[in-house]
Image 1 (cartoon, rainbow over the protein chains, first blue to last red):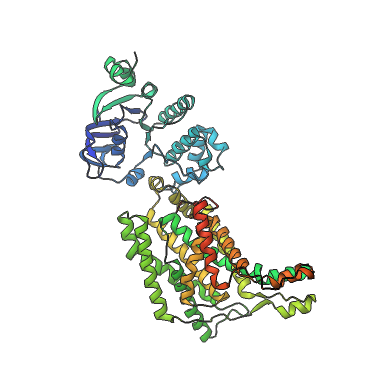
Image 2: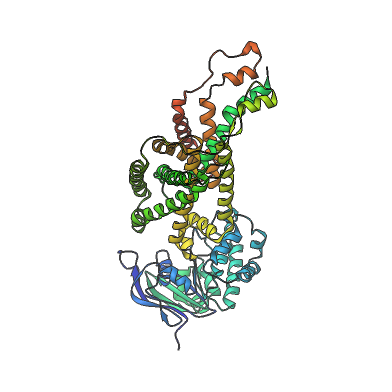
Length: 238
Length: 336
């Protein structure tokens, strides 16, 4: 089996000089695929994603994008390589308009970005109506749309989302997931961390259950949902 | 009772001088607020940066005067201003490279950068005094008045004269142009927008591929333009004396904080609020009131609320009140 497009291979590492938080953790995602990282609180979900994006030291293991080793690159350099990251909080420019937020997302691009902007507006029609409004005045769900839209403006091959549905209502959450599936259909790899494990695994091609910085279970979203061990220890209920 | 004369006196002694002074403060405060928004520290060297820029401009002005270049009715200093700006921008970029960049790389706390700027202030202070001396310098030439008090009296037949000095007119016109250009730059250009983005959310700006060093460089250059312009206009309007520029630091910071640090619109509003408060509180209202009130109520004293010696107390009081009751400023900047 050939290696997936993006792979964080047996990563171990932590923040600064602190102890290791990840212990040989592997996360991978292929083009057009949705990979979801779930796990209990403090399992290192966000840390695993940040490791893939280069926001902490990976002391062992490697991160490869399209076969190229990018372990040593800074997050900014990874943006140039086609990776886009949507942080969990502070993920928009609150004082700038929606349109300016999208423009800033395309800052690195020299070409005309009007097409990408139209695509984002097609994906999130509400943003087109609010494009002259300051992003900080929008509702939580709309802010997340701006954040995802900003990330998409770089024309990424990989979109990484850190808990995109944190703090939004269930209806908005379903809609966001629908949009994320649409994005994945255009061939972009999606790697996301989610608290709402059940719903996230339903749309996941691959699910990673992390426990204490280690891979506890890996499989398709459907398999994990049906795995009695995962259900009992992690998803709760029957 | 003579309301027209009262209004002319008010215009002459309060509104025109305060507008000119407010414009100078606004330009100074804009520089402070930009640096605060982008580099996230209060630049105490700003007053002396203004002095440095004004000094270079004065030296170039003298050189132009010596070789006989002039702008006719306009002061030669306007012609020398671009040279002053270029030299100041160069000086600030060097300071950034030699001083501030080191602390930025260390991710030093803002207070450490403030202390570093205090050091830069003392060095600039010394450089300016060594080069041009601590004394007062006059460099204003060209026409002195747009409207002369005597001509105004003859023209209108009013007993009160109205004097509108060219330095005041130039201050207001240049400020309007500078502010319009700054806002156009910040709101319409890619570089300007990237500066606002960086000021709004540094981490996300990095994730969007905005180059922080470029943003910092452009900020210093803009601050140099604003500081030099403010310094030269103040020197034209009053006189150039290095110590006065150091003293200007208080009203300038008061303006920036009253408006909300990091908010350019607030800096402008703050500049005029401070200037008008200072002028109205230290002005002797006797003349205006004598014209405006019926004769029986005409005041005997000067009706001066505060001696002009205490004018800095006004900025200081406003500063304290704002910090206690509205620490984010009137236009919601960042907390101090």
